[in-house]
Length: 118
Image 1 (cartoon, one colour):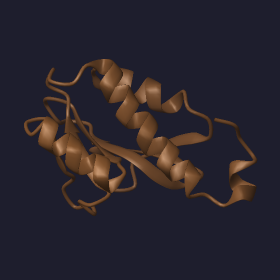
Image 2 (cartoon, one colour):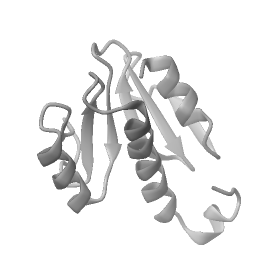
Image 3 (tube, rainbow, N blue to C red):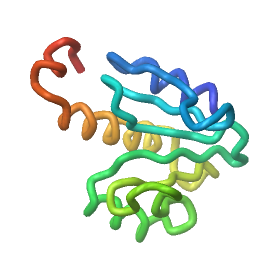
């Protein structure tokens, strides 16, 4: 997966916006103004931070120690940094993005969730 694929995939989800609130080098994706993914625009290989269920986060870190770790500057219990260097297939990366998006959407007030469908 490369940055354009990541961007296109994130933006294909309902109610997603992108911005650079932390400066020009960090792209942030939000749903209903809540962050679900961020990535450095200059990171090589591509890496991104995504929200994750705490138990699943630990399992992923154990299973893929070279590609999944606690996200830098984020709550490491709930956020993983995922390094896209071939250990995880694109489908697995998309599943992690989906999981992050769905966690954030599930935490939104019902009245906000009802304004878009997933």
